Image (cartoon, rainbow, N blue to C red; front, side, top):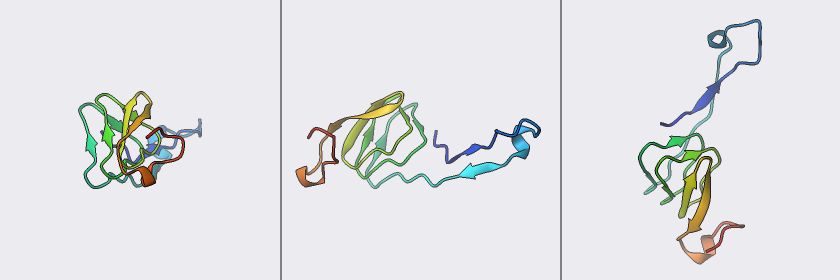
Length: 89
């Protein structure tokens, strides 16, 4: 499932469906793989891999394996010079 936004819900005097919807674009990079039963709420980078049953709430950098609920980067497998800060290569 890819969700590109959220319902507004903070006004207690209006029904949820009358409060509108906040859209945001979701980008799935070239060559990225999203496996079965995942929920995607943020971008997935080029050639990234999202493990089964994961919930992506923050962007997944390119060439990274993300897993869990919420998904977190568990491995980087791309070129050393493109390794994102804070991720072990």
